[in-house]
Length: 184
Length: 235
Image (cartoon, rainbow over all chains, first blue to last red; front, side, top):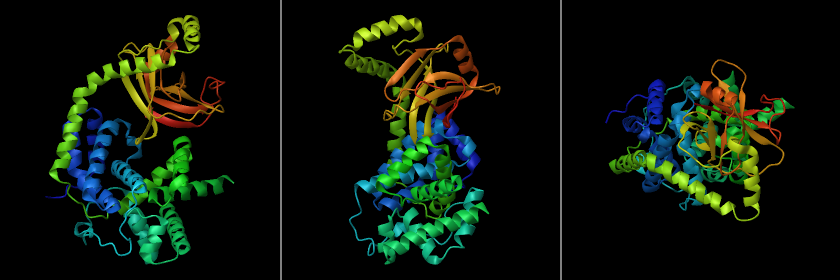
């Protein structure tokens, strides 16, 4: 299956049609973003059945709340990604992963491809990619573990085999550097 | 001082979006962005920035049955739309009946006579206007009007803790840039239905957006929003 290119205008038009209760628009939206959103949720929850349940909830929420998406923000994909991530993180709080974080092996389907999975769609996102390069490798790793895998400070520390305080300050400084870089 | 506070909010927003802000601190920040425009804007900035990390992940195709379940759910949603309107009306009347015993019945009667047709509590067919919330994922109020725009109905989606220090006030923002017109205070729980004055009704029909501001307990003393505008919904 060819990965469709994600275009913000197109996504916004689809959201507008969902707000008008057009099921074909939701189907098109699903075809474009469901695999990316499932990846986001799978990385955090590590279980396909749970992740697909969340994906279902997320799309029903998108259907119901498409009318509230604010076009002025111009960030349809970030909006949908946030809905999916917060729901997955909330679920994680309820049922902590039992597997040891250090030894846990990634399911094969979670191992990242070499090529960029989808087109980056906004200037902010392209800028972030450049700004990530100014961070140390450890800082980049911390951000990825927290954001992509949904790990807490403690989880990141365990995964990187570093003291908690060190990891907390790496993350804080990484975010401050990113902010400076993105605002410059 | 403000600059420092801005920095604190910025870093809280960053750790909230990153996911490392957990437990009570996460809940506290959720309350902050729901009520503070600066915190809300900082959260949105970081969501946009960090989304690039989500786009680095290799997509995983969901199984076909996931779409089938979603399709069935939204088909039911479309079919149930009319039935829902009816059920919501019955539910609202039932809830009201539970409130009636106690001395409230007498008070309600006096209140109704005093207010006459300005305030009615019976739900009726309405036109959905907008859903207000700090964020699309966190709806706070659903606002509807009667077909003739003489009546307004507001349903609280998520109940708010009572706070005697302030009130949320609803405003119609006219498309032609004229000043906002107050549509009254918003409930913290449950739902309200009220009759609108001619001026309010005209403002509502001319409005492109509705906004919510934080005001003193009795509402804005000036007739214009005096506190921060915390939510805006497009009609």
